[in-house]
Image (cartoon, rainbow over all chains, first blue to last red; front, top):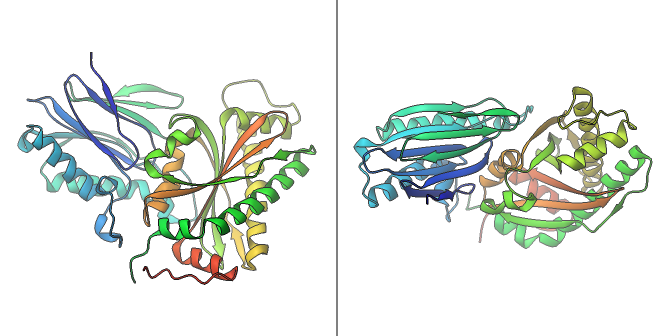
Amino acid sequence: MSEIIKVGMADLKTCIKPDGVTTLGLGSCVGVAIRDPNTGIGGLVHVMLPDSTAIKNSNLNIAKFADTGIVELVRQMEALGANKSRMVAKIAGGAAMFASSRPDIVQVGQRNVEATIAVLNQLKIPILAKDVGLNYGRTVIFYPETGDYVIRAVGKPETVI
Amino acid sequence: MGSVNLDEVSEKYNDVLKEIGNIGAGNAMTALSQMLQTKVDMKVPQVKLVELSEVGTLMGGEEQIMAAVFLGVEGDITGSMMFMVEKASAKHLIKKVMMGMAPESDDFTDMELSALKEVGNIITGAYLNSLSTLTNLKIYPTPPDLQVDMAGAILSVPAIMFGLNGDKLLLIQSQFFDEIQIDGFFVLIPDLESYAKILSSLGIPVDLEGE
């Protein structure tokens, strides 16, 4: 029996096939799913903010940021036996949930997406698919065995990227 | 600037924030009661400092459908504010405002959404008004935006704003009773400097420069 492991907000989890990872109700955050197809090792990080270095705070939750969170997910997957050179990624989320006069509110999702793409590029992990932006929330489920990234949204048909 | 942690600020001034929340929510309910022209009873609001990872579960799961009104705050303080209710409660409020003219359907029509936005506008306006009176600070709301979506997705916006300065989110849960029990959530998201301004205007000296 396979299990679906839940990832909370500003959180990350790894899994091994046939298990999957999920995060519910992504809004402006980005769900970064990575897998090594050879080993079936995968994981998901729920990124909330683009850049840890922009925050002056000592007790950082590293899963919260694109830069530290993705690097940590890759590290944990490698510890399980995954190979970074084989890793591929899919990303979802980064919505602009509200129209606001404040650009920092409107652009927060987009900035998360941009930072996520930049970090993945830096790590040389190819992005195979993405479903990002727009103005609605997404629940995502990732299966490292097949690479299927299932996306659910309110009032919309389920899609797989 | 020294190390600023909103979690510490919030914990330290919990009583004050609770009181602000209490008065604000009370005023909001009075406004709602006038709008609906019925008596609205409310419980003492709960001020909760919630871990980001637990945010979704608080409202019956991250995928619980909620309606939320979001607006910016300008004037002497800056930030944003949000009021959210669960979908069934939103439907109930709309029905009352539209005096039974709302159709029985699962989705929201444009007219319903506009009515709901107005309810949210009045509730948040009353809340900010009382905060303004209490602190003697000028506080102006910007036009509201309404969103109906999953709780987690909606809460991601205030969570991100709070996440800049800590790992917790400050929520004010206000339970009120019309004909049914309605759980409303207020989230006031002052920018960090405004936090200090609110507290010091209430006569509480604040040191936001850390230890």
